[in-house]
Image (cartoon, rainbow over the protein chains, first blue to last red):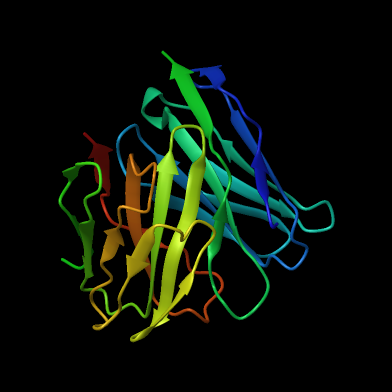
Length: 112
Length: 115
């Protein structure tokens, strides 16, 4: 069973701090990873994608991928109360059928 | 504007009743997916389709059926065989099943409740 595991949380950080969200995956053939943000009662929204080892930055968000350790992370700098949401990590496995496997999500609360 | 439309937003099902959830996209995407989300369970794949007139079972297909007669449409039927259908159902699409660095675009979801 190919799995994506996220630190269960919930995670609480003060406004302006760095929030660190982590994810591990079991399928060594996984090639691309995605971070989605999901507000309560809403559908997931794609915020970052990464498929090469190293860091990828987009505004206040940095995704990190380490394929040797099978580890993906998302850093949110200068956290804002509007960042409070559940963050879902997802990976696409090897093979010809493209389908994402999602972790259970980490609830982040940013306190003003 | 292009996007994915799911309807209805809320749906109530009686015991023993089949219901169909609609998913329509105007993004010209090839691949479409149905996920179920339960509290604390993350998203679990029900069915997916990479091309018209073809679809595959996901991890939790029992009690569900789908069709893909048109590129734009991928309806999901929740049958009476699905014993615990209360959940948030999400439809998603992707531009090309061969592009690994593209994520999904999600619809706004349908919340199904058994009454």
